[in-house]
Length: 365
Image (cartoon, rainbow, N blue to C red):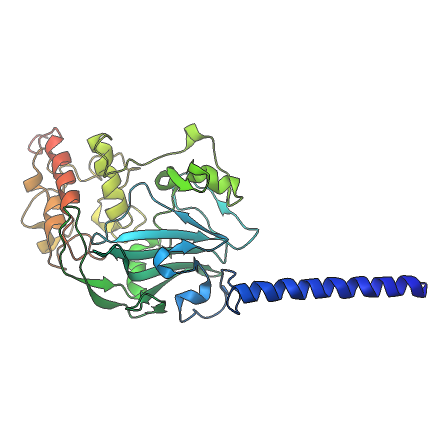
């Protein structure tokens, strides 16, 4: 190669190198001296602090998703002692989620589901309580609880869980004191188990098929995920299932009740779940009245039956074990067993109203 071309090539490479260094330097300076690119090592140890993942951008109080992290929401959410929840999903660059018509979507290795629990304060600020991460590692999903510091500056890994005093505002506008329980890592497996394997609960097509407010306005979440290159295999809108929002009275009562039972009970009470021996399957996919509990006697409820004969006694909520256990506060009797300390009065009222509307007579053959 002639010397003139050699000098030109050397100068070009030098210029490109300086440009790359300048870009990297400006990026790091803007980030306060450290990279803010979100993510984690799927084969590495869990970071001690939530901030090390880079999922949340700026002031933690704002709970703003970093670039490359996407907020999402559910049609019908799990009740968790009236806590508000902010949800994010992260996928490694260039990867996609695989659509499934019934079960939770299949996420690639390196993905993360980020759910932050918080309560509103009287001054409008957020009392950040905990952030639960589901990390998709090579060997499967891992659950990690992070407890927020009192000043809300960061959250620290809390494998053993914990308790803290909060004052949630109820739907009535009243406040009550609560010893909030952060589950330990092993307790998370108690609900997130499908056929013996750890699995997410919320991100199913029928619970994501809703509008979400993005910068361009309201867009269906599933369409948005596809447009952003996050989701593969999405069918046409008419072929996508959707739950009712149990909080909205404009939906049919039966649809609201089943949506509530699915998200609050169905992760355990399903043929592949931890409570499969009960024979009680509380999902919207179940169509057998006996498996739904209609005139069904409990298998092994013990004192949890309250001396009642049927899981669901059509027309008689006071004679239904389902209602009895939802109303209990005794940890050995109440349902769900984990995830709540307070009675969800609105949920109980919904299930009572639904059972009272059901026709039938369990005394008939």
